[in-house]
Image (cartoon, rainbow, N blue to C red; front, side, top):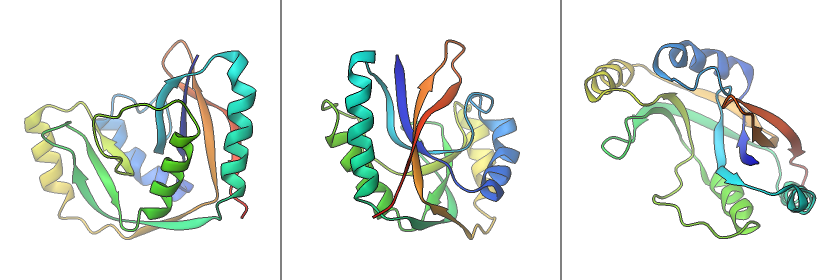
Length: 169
């Protein structure tokens, strides 16, 4: 089965981001706005219990934190994705590193940049148009992160929470 690990911002940020995602993100209906901590990966049923125990330990080692979204950015030309950038992303990078170290090593083709996707799989023209408009907007949003979620992917491509891990150092 396919799994992924993510954090969700608070509802007021999800509502704002969804107002853009409805139009610019084909994955809008598959998963709420989130910050990925571990990309989609395969995990067999016999390894699931061990994986959840490792994730519980990671959650116990970390305390809740606040992140701030401050501007719109993009990954062009690597990917036609527009996202809300995070001002101080070190706590997310730490979680990402700890989580990835607890699973089989995987080589990622890019550096980990925590972000909140606004739009993806856009044409180049649409990307430049939307980015040109959104970069003029001021974003000063903050959200508390006090948990992360092990998600599993359903046959229709949508994602559901398998287990939630509370940060409680």
